[in-house]
Image (cartoon, rainbow, N blue to C red):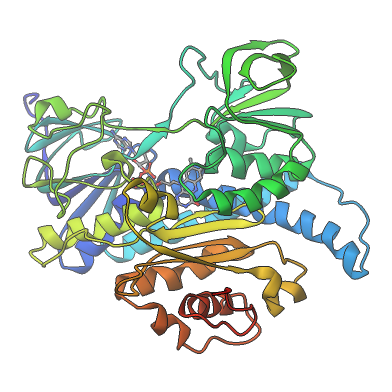
Length: 474
Ligand code: FAD
């Protein structure tokens, strides 16, 4: 400590104001705790609001509008080709983000949560030093580490700010619409951002190391999306690696190794979306007893306590599903635990959604996980070609699948590919959390005509008789 330095005391100190951090802070405040959040950006929302979920979904909606106007032609409505005003699109996206950011600051103010702008690092297990703030040192009763994650750079190829090689943050800034865009990484971030640019007019090439895109989701769901992406993207190269990436005056020169005809290509921009690393370095972890695994993810128990019982960690920095809703739930568990409430992060199903066209959503056990664990499951599929609602929307390319324990008939997993899959998956999550049987879903009356009926019908099909598809031959 520096002589004469003021140290502010706070009951709960949250480091990082992303969805995990602010959800934890708000819950702790609602439970009567005195809370301070330190975020280096001085505002709440984190990656999700400023560089992730919200800007990407706002732009994906613009992309969907463009696709829908083209699709309308089949229905007898012809629109002129869209005229894009990139400045206005960017402004719209920024306005959406700013409105939500203001809302979060109001919520924290009205709850009496103090938000401090600065970079925090542990000095020891009971003190945090803050750079860039008038209050340079805090002592706390409980701390919650919610510092999130950052994009993993392609080894050996550093991103230059404003350069042609971009991370998702650069891509979402939407500086321009490059004529030729290379997307390195066929996970959900690469595919979502590639879809945005392709819809806005870029010629998009996706390169993926694995033998298919989005390896976390079942192959049959991904296959339906890939059929659509093959039309949208210029090329998808799986089993392919980028071995060199050089930023030049006229573009990004790339060497590809794998199943490609042209190993040397030039693009106007390259987006690197190969994963995310935890923000656990440079936060003074070494000055505490908090432990991390070899990849830098902080180790926690089911109350989100680290190896120091009064220090918690939540969200992307602890790993697992690096998703905002997981971070928020963990945040609430940490807040409830430190407030003395009984709480645990003990979920059966964390949903995942890919907001492409069509969307993919899944929860619980996937068919491939069941196979790799040698677990016997019964998988039933309901094709959307049998759905009246899908037909009326002109969106018959879709499927709802159910993964059920054949012994107990308990629902273990659900997967959906198609329009609004992300909205529909919550029913599967609820079914799994409630320990529902396939019969519970089949006996729940769903409104007609809706896409959600496919969830009732897939359960009926599991039981042997679904109204709109023929029973499987015995
Ligand atoms: P973060 O959101 O990363 O927030 C951490 C905060 O801590 C940041 O504000 C950071 O500035 C601050 N910070 C870090 N270190 C310090 C320090 N030393 N001192 C002070 N402050 C610090 N998830 C979904 O669920 N749905 C989606 O649709 C989705 N889309 C995504 C799209 C993209 C392009 C990306 C990149 C991510 C997306 N995600 C999505 C993932 C989601 O953004 C993250 O899972 C989520 O933001 C994690 O929340 P968090 O609170 O753990 O951390």
